[in-house]
Length: 260
Image 1: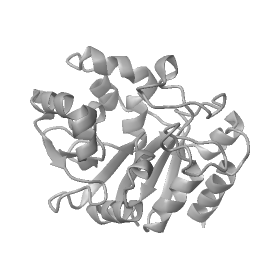
Image 2 (image 1 turned 60 degrees about the horizontal axis):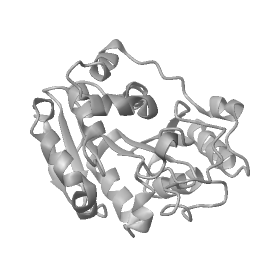
Image 3 (image 1 turned 30 degrees about the vertical axis):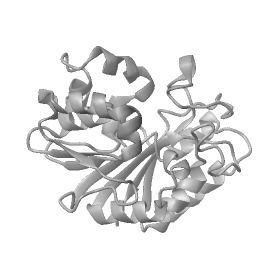
């Protein structure tokens, strides 16, 4: 009953015609306490300056903590890009863990191949398996019984790439162990816009995404507010290529789904 109430609350709050207020976000969100071990992952002195420059807008310590990343886990990241998050996951799960980092052809040909390949050659990525697959079926057979699958700031891209999102979400469901986490963060669109802004503004409405993921059999387990920005009018492009000085300031939802 509690999970049903939580889902209804999220759907209702997303249907509001105004951005989330601080009060509403606080009511829906779970407090995030960051363990020292995860703080140390983010503070590791051998992380690159380029990655550190992104931290203020990406909140990596809170992200790892909210989704429960621990040593020894088997996790995956969809649309890993150049590997900013994949490296953090690799450090957090440690030598006894494993990370599957997926990119599709579009990402590799347009921007990811060079930085992704270079990062994979570094010592921090020894426990990372490169996965080149399309998002309709994003994970190989060996990526099974996973503890978590991460999809950060890119779910909206599956709309204009015409990914079969129902098939993608079902594939993630099958790759996770019971109790495994589907970790999604994305830029929120204005109320009532659904997927209409996915290509132009690089946003998707939270309620639309929640409905799609629940349809695959997931349960909404939690929401955090550390990337919320009630002041965001949600009328500008959140793409890192065009956001300029506003990069990292969009109103973003942080949702933890679980395979029952």
